[in-house]
Image 1 (cartoon, rainbow, N blue to C red):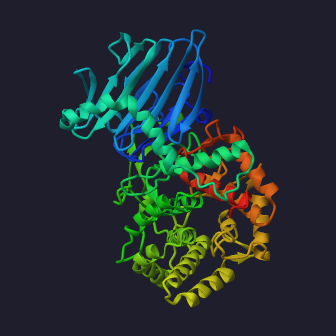
Image 2: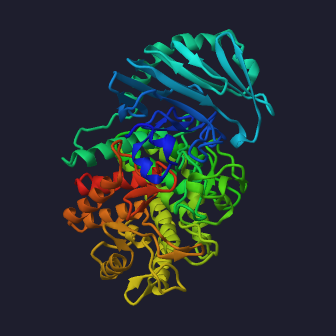
Length: 594
């Protein structure tokens, strides 16, 4: 990365190739190759950012460390979710290792430098809507929220050669740390035990490396890799990303760590993805089971089982990582937005929608877990929930909904009907595990007949019963076993998708919606197409798609939501757990592991 690029030019999605992601399974941070903390929320993923540089480079908060002189930099993961940025200058080198301490709301930046560094630290509260009271106490820099009891405390264990009144410091060469910790109450900071933690930080990097290396270890016994260094890298990184999106206290997995990174810069497709979508979480749980992280996959599924509502529809669309619901969204009007894309949002209105596909994705993931683990005790312990989901779907499959693309108008979407068939199929399979009869066979047959009679036109699947258009979701129908991949109706649908939705190796989810024309392909849909090609035996085409996405990915192997085909960059919230799960599935099929 060129020196001081971010000082002279505003952030764009081109910079995302040099964004790193770290997590401690409580919260997450994005860090670029210029030593900027771009995004950091405390105390949880969905909390307000204390550093929101991504959304406003002047008013969103700043935490940067870089050499004072011109530099070049490169980044690498020394373990999953532990990022090292190495700077080289004419006078010497510097490395900064960034990690979030497990179990603590604390960001640690370990520094080894041969040159002078410049540090700037200006955190915010409440999206910079709350004043910050600054003070210094016993060698700590203290930032208090003037409107609450929240406190941030920073410790600089480096030689400070110079400082200014506006939060800028010059650090001398040497070894040390810059630490930023969050406290919900200012009183907690004064506990002696809290102060002592800062003294143990030099030992914490080694233990954090061991923690993540163990947690993200891939079960390689019998697992084939691709032989392509970049694809194998993304596969391994994807496991770390999905685990990093998991909230350890509950096991829930969020969709992405950011809010309001636009799908289309300058447009209105700006959403908050810092929540648990049942659909996304279920697919990511399946990916964890595929890669040997079966215990973590089970934890995610266990959490969703705990959310089942026995008084109505079994599951809502999305939740906070604590299991509580989200009610609407608020607009953050005082921040400029990434690439001036407004509005900046907190919350998500999709929580109010009816989405009938999600129980299917969930029970498919539960069945997938059982096939990987043979854990009949898990199935038996959740039998009542499985039966309730099956019975509710059987009674309500004719309802309309917003479906996977969260459409504003409820209709009879083909994908939702198919996924309700999947829910009943997997429920029946799970009941057989405990020697109970499958009581939904007739309803499944009725659903399939309805789909084939109402959602197939001109020989191919359409998006919903009253439409003649096709979206990308039928690519999943053979993956879930609803139809054979060689069935004539599917192969005809595949031709329509290839003709109308595929562009340069990438796939649009649809061509337009209520917000207008779709401007960028949806990364996940490209992985769906790759999976289908593998199922058809055409692994050459399957790999070409993965290679196309890998080309867009930066040196760290992170994947975003949408792809700007012209600029060859990701757009939307980043990194995207859904996309990484899709990559794992496509990779597993392409390499013959599924």
